[in-house]
Amino acid sequence: MNGGDILSLITVFVLAAFVGFEVISKVPSVLHTPLMSGTNAIHGVVLVGSMIVLGTAHGSLQITLGFVAVVLATVNVVGGFVVTDRMLEMFKKREPPKKDDDGR
Image 1 (cartoon, rainbow, N blue to C red):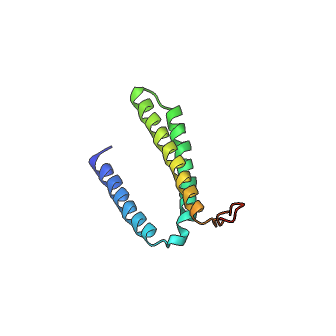
Image 2 (image 1 turned 30 degrees about the horizontal axis):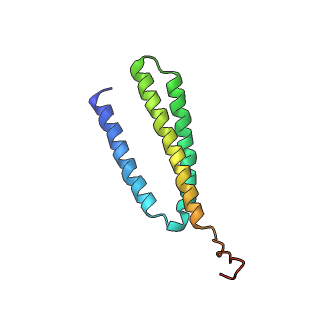
Image 3 (image 1 turned 60 degrees about the horizontal axis):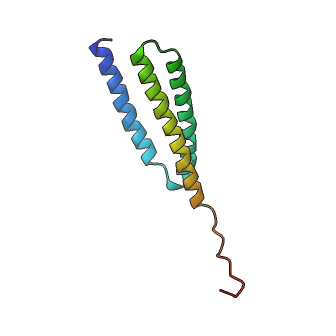
């Protein structure tokens, strides 16, 4: 890989970061839960990809980086579902407190 290739990759990464920030910042609050669910599905694909990379790794550096990728992708997927579950809990109706037998 030469310097031009690296510069091209960095340029694409920076442009993708700016576009992603602009798109996500324009999403209304009501759509955050469906957006989070869709993002979790994408991260599931990332997890599968990192497992494939780990399975084809040769050498200790590749195995270590693949393992770190699998761990981080797993944490990301699980954390995303936990956040989505907590967000959905906020929209559930709460039952009024039950009165005791003595009327309190």
